[in-house]
Image (tube, rainbow, N blue to C red):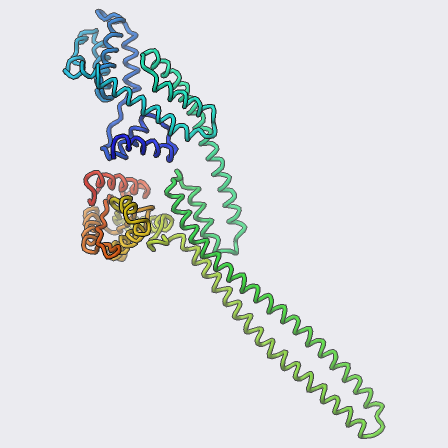
Length: 521
């Protein structure tokens, strides 16, 4: 990437991460994107405080006008912030020693006069332009809810590009100072608003969890959202990952829920038919009783045997009818009972599937490995076990090399298939007692219990070698998948998240060392 592309990407990332656009944050993010090694920050506040104190103090042989001239020369002739810091430090030291070193070497490295007329003004102009873009692109995005400050940022940006004289720059400095104070208040208000909204969402989640006692299949979603809200800071990558998994889970559960509702509707219909059949049976029985009473009256009034015979035939006919109705009702009731039992079994099966689908929130639907939630549970379980038995456990964090380039050139579907291939090869290479989890995006974590640090490094190197043997095939093309990895051993009193952070730092060292490496920390 060219410096201008890196600068644009830095501004975009500042806006996406909602990071305050301070010079330190800009430089740190710029170095991160450019792949520059981390630089020890310059303590400007201490330097300026000491410089101002020496500037205001009286020194023999050094007049205020002389000090101003020396300071102006340093400011103009220093082409880089590092050189400016060193020269200002030397200048303050010379004043504190009574001006003995007023002709110090900060004026004399040969390139300074040229820089004063050429490179330094150009560097100042570039720096002003970068700060102007920072105010326009990054700060403007953060101030969408405060139009007044957004307009002030735009005005400062325009004035910064136009500033040329020391007086104009001094005026800009005062305005920037006031603007930074107001920006700090806005940031604090936004942080408080975010905290209040998260607290409100947490209360709603807890209330839902209390209301759905009987619906175990909902607990997975509730638990996942609760974990997101409780985990600070909330990252966009984490939210995107959870949103994707929630969509897959909700789609499957909605289909199962539809089948469950249909099964319950069938059960209700069968129960209604059962009640109707009982009513019909009761009606038939009542009609039979009426017929028997009528036949009894006829028998009482009968004068000869022939009349009694006719009544008996009628009684037998009604008895056969009621017998057939009873037999048919019995068969129908038995069939209904069988169908009810089958419907109940189907409901239980669907309910179990819903619960199992809810449990899927512990696994990554793409690779089949554990996800962040499943990994957290596995880490907690393994750490308790190894500490109980006074054993060792190592954590490896690996990140696929050049994954964005692979995605851009072959497509996202090929990128997903590459992640599946990596997960399969890794799972086949590590031991059965080791645990593989997708940490997010193209990052994976491997837990290696009962393993020393050197052995853990060797294990991850074996995975790298296995990937060089088992190529990823895309449309019959062999594509080499590599990863950079950081490995750490969990200390006796260390929190697992701290170990993962150390592994992440080691992984970035592996990236900067040339990629496709394993670095222990």
